[in-house]
Length: 149
Length: 469
Image (tube, rainbow over all chains, first blue to last red; front, top):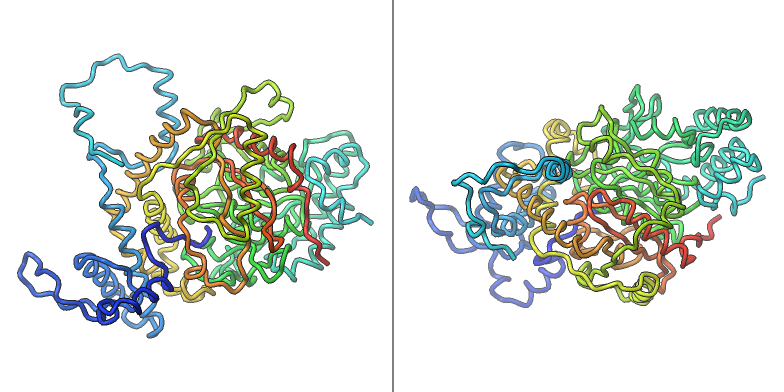
């Protein structure tokens, strides 16, 4: 695998650092305001952002931080201080990818393509055996599918 | 004494001489071994040479051919295999310290198929540790250190088939076997100025190959021409009962004859306008010239555009999760700390944290994308774009910060298991190779081979090789 490239809308560390020095707000945002309270009403501690974190919503910051804390809890004695900084950064740069993925509409009926084999098999089946049954009444209409770009 | 000009001949040209008995497979193997011993260490190209096996196989080939039993275009032709393929009795280190003493007692199906074809195994090609499965920040993420580009040894070969790229470009073997999960054949082929085929997912058995991403790993040839790739692919493709992800017998097998192309119907080409957001200034002229050449050679080429969506993100999530599963024991035990790369040492812990629902969503996105690409291929047989938007980067570059650019075609192509063939198409103004990739719908590997071969019949870039000593 080549070193994985960053998705379209993310920032390189360098780019982020440059922007951070330009923006006073970003520069002073090591500690962010309290995120919204979770439904339980338990107050959430402020998320400590890594210096080069991508721009994230409060919810995404919390999720990225929870990921980082979970790693530390699971492997408490495993990392050096330098690695911890790196880990935290990685937890945050993963978040935009997840956010983009989740924001893209998929329907309940969209099957996960675990392997590519089924695509080829489907082609074969459709050629060999035409569907003789009419669609059941419960088949969702095409308009029920989410709109995709 | 065999000259370097002979060692730089394509496998197809070597085959003609071997078949006519004007070239001895034993002499050829010895010459490649000699050159590999001299130049291999300078380039960090090989994980290990296997001269005993090479000479045994070459001797057997020579004897058989002498008796009139010629097996086909790879008989007696020497090659190197990426060090993630099991080779009986020879260590398969996967490029990584934790596996440096790993030896399998069987051959990967690809190695077995090549042995049956009469090809001669020279040794194992160096690679990025775990094929980059834990991610990496530096070219030095390998047991052998950073692979040096034969065109300029202060530059990298790209990864993870780094040694395979260096070996073919430096004339240390007639061809090499590489693997790609995302970019690992296409990028080293482009950086090193060689021809590399990433086959359709499921056409080449992965039995005996290190798994990084079960639903995205592919094995393919890197060679001196598209025609060579076709001959090698014909040997290694096919259904394998030992690999449940291989396609059925009729869909996996590939037979190739250059003459059959004459009667084939013309291909419809699309030049991708959104494969790269920006082309590096040093590579711009070469890529523009390549586009003009494509439009001239393949008249009727129209503009085409890739669908937009979170496809790179989906690919990244799938690889991260499958990689964390494949190397779960390595991560949990803490042995992942033995990897050379600082990013590789810790990234697996982050991948472990990705939720199952996000993984399934990525697979759903892949399903949707497959349909979108099927629709795009209703109008085109082959899509064309630069293989990379730049020439080889410096050996010491921080890949995480210095090499940031989106790669939608790599993401989409690998997510959907589409075949791609990268061929040399010129040089940057720093004299580094630039590549052009042809991509087709899943299963239509022949289309990319035909396209790349036509391109090479009209150009000479694939015949250039670096001056090294």
